[in-house]
Length: 501
Image (cartoon, rainbow, N blue to C red):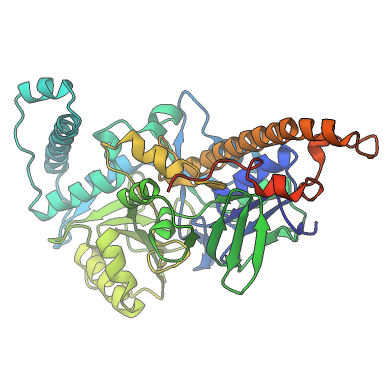
């Protein structure tokens, strides 16, 4: 299908939020839409790549939250389209902790260290709750203060640092209930499908975009279109791209990451209001880097409960969390090590050869000097990718509802979506999916209200001018804006209120 000259809606970003939003709009009769994607593919932070003879997921790699009281919508999509997955059990990782001499920490010591870390994290959480309650004058703060609490301990030894990393970067649900696991279940499934996790997005797109042989050929999806400026007013939005293209539209759904919103990639004219900028700045960005290593043969344990193992080092997060891919792809001889935040940014800035040297040194500490060298390495760079600027949003455990509201709230004719706008499921694929649906529904309601407003404004005009000549199927509410007297349209009475700057 050809792209419309002036679409009703332009969606910026073809990740799962953008595709989900476009699908809902199309299902509700808004087919004159355009999707502008900065890269050469759909998927956003869901991205596969061929490595070591298999398909690996550089970004989102799990469907988290399965088997609970409510069905996870992304899991349902996976079942519907036959996505291949493998069950992952992180809980055993804490019992597969290696020190730098290659010894596995005894399970009793590991369990005690883990309990100590959980207790410390709970104390930190209580302290945050107390500070939050005091800041907002909550009477509940008196109850918290009256409960004697000991100060939280600080991890110091390699095993304490390793467990602290596991707990806070992978298993925070042990400390504070997380909506994903409460609503959808505690099981997590690793995506191990040669078609990739993004296959779900292509199948979603097939329902409203023209496709052929697994490719999207619809001109309403425009790849390699880097949006650099959004000019918005009461009457519409002008979208300008890096290659000099200019698009006019009635509304924009902005489906870019929180990291991009915090960067200088996008300019807004007029600038976004202060309340919006403050909310955006309050959200942290998590950088999550999975480094893939291919070996000539397997040298690590791969029996039951051995999928994940831990490297205890003096530096927190230094090549700490490892996973073998034998469960997902038997015989692949691939290991994955996950870094986060500071370590991710450090590794992104250095050559892959140096990263390989560091990773091999960690593996030789655990498994001895005779293990083979890796024959290939793959290092994603989400932080340095100007179209992503990180992996996902990372709100504080104790967060202000107003921040979520302000991040999600539209500014004029620009609507915001993405996993960072989901108060309950931020940071997850299903959070992005549900956010896209919610945003498109909010926009449809706004369009309905605007259409009713136009009809009400036109009724007295028609009484003065007499009946218009039009064919029977036409209705007043379907008159194009160019058929309305110019002065009435430009007066702004047909637009929605301007943003409060």
